[in-house]
Image (cartoon, rainbow, N blue to C red; front, side):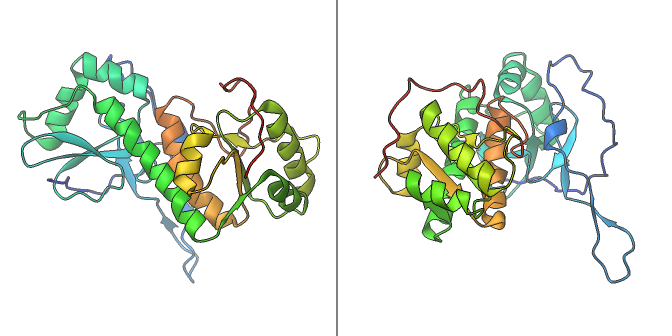
Amino acid sequence: MRTPNNERLGRRHPNPSPSGDGTGVGPVAKLQHSPHPNPSPQGEGLKAVPERKCILSGEHGSRAALVRLAVSPDGLVLPDVHAKAPGRGAWIGVTRAELETALAKGKLKGALGRAFKTGALDIPADLPDRLEDALRRAFADRLGLEMRSGGIILGTARIAETARGGAVSALFHASDSSEDGRKKLDQAWRVGQEREGSGDRGTILPLDRAALSVALGRENVVHLALGDPKAAKRVRGPLQRLLHFLGADRSLADTTSDGARTAPAAHDDEI
């Protein structure tokens, strides 16, 4: 596969305006990251987070937040969520609905033609499906890695005990977990974090218990927690990209389960 000239992009304007090309593609403001101070001994200057430009919206976002598309030698456009494929590439930071609109109206074809500098491209009609599947796999793989390293806490009783002790950095629930089960663990987490009354709640994942069980190699995984803040950050990265693409993009620091879609209440007895 051929990959893009990954030229450095300038820092985004603090108040970027939405695209005016009539594609209906909105900004990726939530995916953008401001430059961080450069911790040099001199304490001078800023170190910018690597950024890329979304070919559809025109907005800039961090390289880790946008998704790369690459093209195979025969011209097939494919997701490259790990940004490792060789050759030219293009970056997008839009939702699935926005991508589908751009694909249907021919805007994606034009944008890819300009990015790859060729008109001989094969854009699969199921590209949105392929991209969503790739993002889901990337998130599931990240969970599997954290599980194998021993960083994930499972079991309702164990999570509750650890959470009350203040040793849980991130709390997650399967999409088909029961509201009652979530509330009990959310409460234990708030107590441990000394945030009672804040309304803070764990994040409902876009994966059900069956998918979580496969990802973690355990049976009936309904809830999971992470104690190490660094591990929590590693998990939040691919999760945020998936949530944004699904149109459920929210800050994970204050995500609540209110209004989330869930299956009918089920028992959360875990093995």
